[in-house]
Image 1 (cartoon, rainbow, N blue to C red):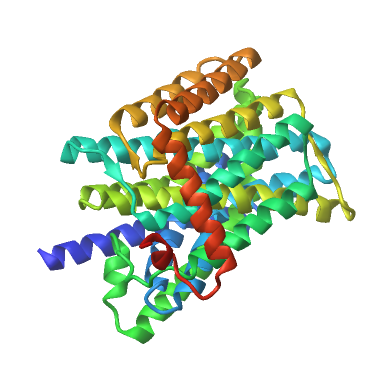
Image 2: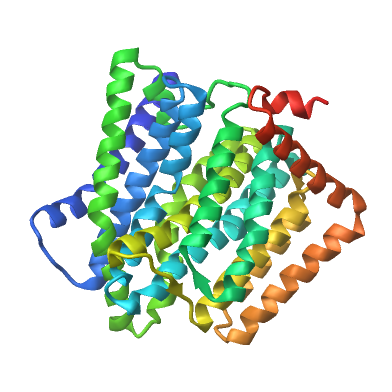
Length: 410
């Protein structure tokens, strides 16, 4: 059985590598095909590379310090979304028509992670165990920073711009988050799938394979970002589909699938806390680092500090994303995501896709905010939990020598 399991892991690894090859081959020889096939081939290349990055990240935790592992995983977790979004931001520096696509990919990735990712693992865990999925107390750090980032995010649609000021605040949050998280307890990584087989290799071979996967995946993602993004836009024009929608939902599907798949594997392995915790961490990374880098890339492309001016559609999308995040936090404040909460998040996410009217997006934003307020004030303990999380986080920031577990044990 172990031999078969090992063979299956290596087979999955080989498949992930193989689906990146056509895109790399097209890119290397400068071959152009129809936009539809370019979007598909380069999208598969990003998907395969994203799986390779996830497995490499898991194995890397065996060989580097906890602090460095956290920083590396946080950066690499958003690499697929970052590269595609960075391409749009860079191009927008010289072509303002690309500005909407920056927020399209960003908001799609964030909403997909909660609407599909969080909901799916919570619901699967309930079906398997007939009880609510929970996260550990150490996850309060992520939830605290996610709350701060979410509250700040409401300012962006109000002022109608995404600027370097936003970058400074969100990047500061991310750095503080990494600094605080690095002082948590060191725990051995829980490997899944091909990462298990790679982790069983001798130290020298394991490190070589891990570094090789990082390099190969990074090259594949960097090489595929531009043709994938342009392929989506060309496909929208060819099929008469709004390009904004394709960028918002198809691009994140390729990059988010590996993280969600690994979380599902954790659930099936009876580790619901790790599953949900992984996706919560990913949300923090996306809502801080990913958003923060876009004005920076845009400004570098322009050769001078610049501001991304948001049109009405972008304002609606960012507001809706912020409202969804607030509602999700109001449910998870008690460190558990019940089945009713998962179904509500999923239902609101799926149904909003069917209504392109701007006022519908404002309506869904209002529903999310109202439901969040109901959840917060219906049970006073929820507000106390959030306040306690913030207190613990601020204490950790002020106390460099103390770890997360020390504060939580008080």
